[in-house]
Length: 356
Image (cartoon, rainbow, N blue to C red; front, side, top):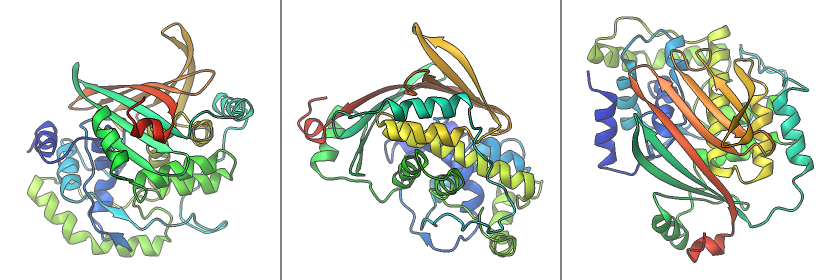
């Protein structure tokens, strides 16, 4: 069995890592093994062994994949980092076999979102800069610079120099999954939360909101690929298509993970912060408690086994502004990942000139 860290090490030789993407592998694994309609060509993305997210053990555990499957997830994701043509939210009243869960009106997160919108006023600059530092197993792994402009452009780098170059080269990633996630968060700030949840989930490839018959057809088409992979990895427990509560858990998992990911791009934008908080308020699996960090009042959001089966993610945000401070992810057989965030408002011209 190939170790997850070995796979990540192999990938680092090919491309810089992204703080979010190894965890995306866990969510995209099942989808990567089935032929989704409208699938786009594979694009290389960055991976990290236990970053703030994408995907968690939630999807894998709930389809009874079994122990040691993290390496399979990484292997599949490295080879098949699937993206798909984004779908619009399912029409109201459509039947998908899963509910979308109303917001917890009056909850701490909803109240904070309202406060952020009320105190937003005029925002300086025209872009959000988030510098993410990742430590895994006590070892500094990387820093990641993500820049999201109010006009919708996204630029990234591994340090100041590469970010400046990305802006100068017009290396805009505006057709990416990240763009769709940020757009869903902005919509969620003032839009219908049921629609916002579906937009956020559909930022990444899935079959969750298709009819049961359509999902069964897609699942059947992927049977040979799943069986071949299971034989190769010695997995005995059959994969089953999530329905009912298991499907709802996968949807909630995607809402959490994609929302957190959008926060790593656009946290300096109050509209995006408010949208993310409203989305997270719809997740009954997430606990919110008051805390302190560095002498400032904070909120600690914990997504436990209900979303990350066998694991846990703890997100700490400022209790007054909603700004992200840190994220700690613990997963079985993977070193603990700690990410810290430096978020600020900047101008695109300033970044281009190296003034940030």
